[in-house]
Length: 315
Image 1 (spheres, rainbow, N blue to C red):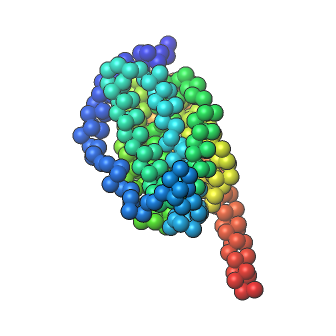
Image 2: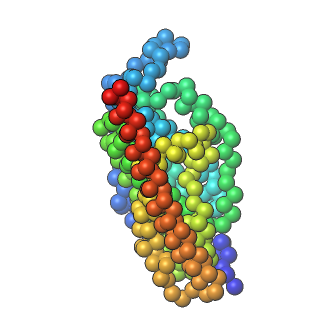
Image 3: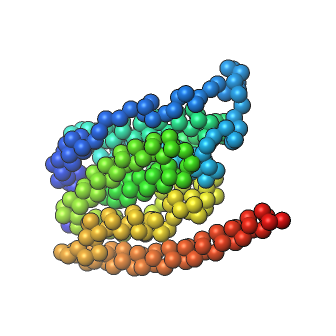
């Protein structure tokens, strides 16, 4: 008989407490206001009769503006994530303490990024607010009834978010932005380690169910911002800009965590676990092919764009 979620929660409580203590001893206190260049701010139009927003007022590149908007709107939906985690993990004991701590740390990200964007006029504040309202009003809480699926998802998602923030900062064109997003990414990395280590323990507690959850998550992975208005078009720019795409997802997110878990070579699995492990391996093979095809298309497209730009300059 496979253990229930309630039993798994209880059996992992000691691991959660240990990982929570490790996290608290490792995490460094930081303050969002220290990363925002307030001296670059000024009043907007509206009741304060300030200066209207214009894209030329910011150092941030157009690609950076797109990625920053997606990143912020993803972080904005923290109330939904907190609800899901508190419902699944519970509000008591080490689990409840972790959910509150994780929520408090994640809340800094939206505060810091929004303050930066508005102070530096990196994005249209009206469009940003309308997108936030739309996303948070229309995106209902998920139906992740499986504890293990949620644990597996956030292990990969936290690493994906870390990489997205770091790469966004790198291409932003503004050192202040890069510094801020590098600091946010440090939080995301610590969160990834927590969930990755918890997933490792889950493989020992419920190997077949956990392997099934990993295979399902890897096979159907989508970033949490997929419900953001205009996400598909933004995702194309983000992929072509080498911020986050299939190659990065395969090489820098899936592979490191799966190697740490020894997921493809784990022994001691039952029939259901072995089937999930086989599906996981097949999906990675297919994803490798997809990433290669993406890189070929990306190179061809960028070459055509460069040729058009060269022709335009010479005309």
